[in-house]
Each structure stands twice: as structure tokens, then as C-alpha cells.
Image (tube, helix red, strand yellow):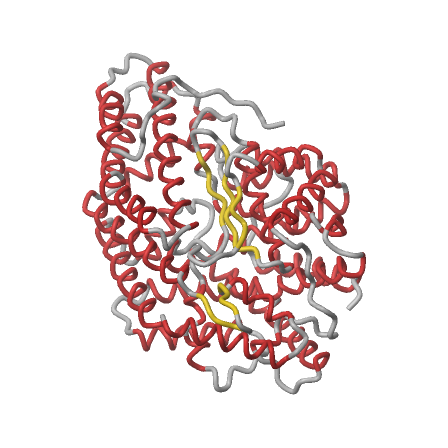
Length: 570
């Protein structure tokens, strides 16, 4: 059963078309002109504004969902662009004005200090960073995001007599026939290279625009601006460097050892990029489900066994247009969970191809949905929708690990052990990749005026620092543009270190789960139910874990992974 909620106010008409500024403007103007005579009046304004912002947020989310589900639909793309051009700029202007009205109100000091601490802190930061001249730049960046999604969504290949999307081609990387794997890998790589120049052009423009945004806000570079804009009150870029050093010291040697062991098991002298996903002992690929419906059925049973409340929350997603899971032509890459803030129901997007990674993605995105659903009763929109990313990813990554005992919903006992080993070994690749992307971004946005050639050199250097024992000879063009596949670099700059911080938190949830499943899940749900209403360290603490991205934490967490690997058959 879903946590109950009722609208925080009846200020917003039920039939409001929140995609049109002419429908929104009178409501926002009424908020700006409303007299405030007491703290209660101010609190009512905050709630009314939240309900109006929720309607707009849901309209925007729906347009984005339609666009990413159908990047080849001109009408969906046009509707999304029109909202970006005609509504978003006005929203930013009126949003800043309302922020200032609330923070500057003479009664703001009479609000409950504990309840509104995070809310007011974030409003003050938004006022500090807001610059009207950045609004058209941010609109242009959003349109470039869409252009990148359209390019990627149009990528298909012909392989073995049929047209396949690139996510669908992932299945062939698990085939035991090495020639098939290589042919599939090269087919995908060649298709990506066809759009290399277009993607480079988009990114070059993005970097230029982001540096302008930072400069307009008074920052020396976009890195420092992004850290501030992402509300990183509890760690700095120096802490990110320390995370990278810890990964380099404690995880990269493990990754390279695992790669050498994989090469030996496969009986090859040199591990090549198409040797990374196949079972090293020559067993058939893991095939956990037959269709998207089958994936949903099995995942439902998994969560009901893990925790009846989580099972019920997952089942609430099985209607109301909450899921789009299959990979198909014209669909944007990747996976995400999006909030629809007025109805307070999440939406999950992914590109399922019938591989083990899809199971991980399904439970991962379900974790995000649980976060949304468990905090849906909070009347403050900001505490439902502005979830700290470092903690939001704890919600999702924890589910990848706590699902281990229930993978027999997808596999035989032997194959369930294989799936657990695959996931744990992937952590040895994922943490270095997170460090790679974060360090690459730090280089990009602290080197104004760098050339594409210098950027490529920096990419190759950081990849060599954190990469595994893989032979890329003859594939230099592909290696130099591997970063094109990381959509966060394009759509969400500097949103990536959060995965590393959250993974360290999720490993702590998993350790608690192994000691006492009931207590660990109760703490997990308790933390998620707080939404974004507490500072980041407090959210971690409420879940029974600590916020820590130090080398010492990385070493400690990795020992836990090594013990688990040692307990599993090869």
C-alpha cells in the first residue's frame, strides 16, 4: 500500500495546463503579489508555491519522458523544445523572485528552524548563484542535451541479418564464440565512430557555454561553480581527488589482477575489449528473463521476499504508465527514474536487452522509486524532489546488493552465484570508472581554452591511470572516444562522483543487511522516508551508515567485497 498523501493546498486548479506560460503566469503573479502578515502566511505561501512548482515539474517531466522514449517523434521533440524555450526561462526568473520574497520576509525567522533549515539554506544558495544572463545559456545547453539524445537514439546496426539497437547488441558480448563477440563489438564501435565528429562538436559547445555560466556567476571555472550549484556542502573537489587516490591505490590493482585471471581462464595471451563480458569458463550467457513483462514479474517476487512493504511499493509501479523498459529504435540510451511531482508517482525508463545487467538496472531504478514513494507524504515539494544525489544513489545501489539472496527468482542456484560474482567483480571496474570520469571532468573544466587534441590526451592519460589490463592496440580511435558513451558528461556534468560516494554507503547497508536483514531494511526505509529534509550526513546516519569517501573507507569496503568473492565459486 502506498504511503498516503494529500495535496498541501488547493491553490492549483486540477485542470491546469502547466506546459503553457499564459496559464502559469497569473498563478505565479498572485504568489509574488500576496501580502505576508505572519509566519503562517509565509508557510502557506511556501506550500502553495510548492504545489504550483509540482504541477510544472510534472509537465516538464512528462515532456522529457515522451522525448526520450521517442527521440524520432518530431511532435514530442518539438513540444519539449517549446517548453525549454517558452516556459523554462520565465520559470527561472519567477523562481528567483519567489526565493527572494521568502528569504527576505520579515517573518522567516519565526519558521521552525529544524524543519526549514535545509529548505532555506538551498534557497539562499540559489539566490547567490542566480544570474539572469545565464538563463538563455541554460536553455541552449538543454537543447544540446536533446540533440545528443537524438543522435544516440538513432544509432542502430545491422547484425546477423537484423537491425539492432546498441543496447540490444550487449547480448553478443556474452557469447562464448570469440569471433562473434569481436564482430559485434567492432560493428558497434564503427557505428559510434560515424557520429564522433557530431558528438565532439556538441560537447565543445557545451563546455564553452558552461564556462560562460560559471564566469557570469563569478567563478574562475565551471568545476568550482558546479560543486557549489550541486550543493556540495559536506565535501570538496579535494575530497574527490582523495577518492580517486584511494581507488587508484586499493581498487585498480585488483581490477588488473582480475583481468589477468580472466585472460588466463579464457586461454588468451591478451585480453581484448570484447573479452570483458563473456563467462571466463565458457558457460552459456546468463539469460535472466524473456521479456519486459517477465522481468517485472520476477522483480516483484524478489521484492516481496525481501520486504513486503518494498514489494507493495514495486507493484504500485505496474500501472499508470510508470514503466518503459524495452530497448527499441528511436529510444534514448541509458536508464533513469523520473519523479512526476504532482501525482507523486515515479517513472522508470531503461533499455532492457535480456542480460544480467538489466536485472541490476531494474532493482537499481526501483530503489530510486522507493525513495520517491517513501517520501511522497512530505508536504514540501523541495523535500520530495530535491534529493541529495549522493544519498539518492544509496537508495538504488543498496538494492543491487540486498537483492543477492533472491536472485533465484531469475536463475538456478549455480547461475545465481555466477550473477553475484559478476556484479561484485564489476564493482572493481565501476569504482575506477567513476574516478576516471570525475578526474576527466575536473581536467576539462579547469583548463580553459584547451584544444580537442589536448582533451583527448588528458582522457587517455586518466584512462591509463585507472584502466584495467586490456589490450587496445589497433583500436586507438575507439579508445580515445570511449567517453562519448558516458551520457552524464553531456546531460549532467559533474554528476558522477555521487555514484562512488553512494557505493561506499551501499556497501555499508549491505554489511548491515548481512548481520540483520530486518534492522538494515528498517534503517534503509527510515532514511529514504526523510527525502531531502536533512543535511547529507544526517541522511546517511538515519540509514545506519556514515558519509565517508576517504581512502581508508575504500580499503575497508573493498575487504568486504573480497571476502564475498572468496565465498563464491568461480
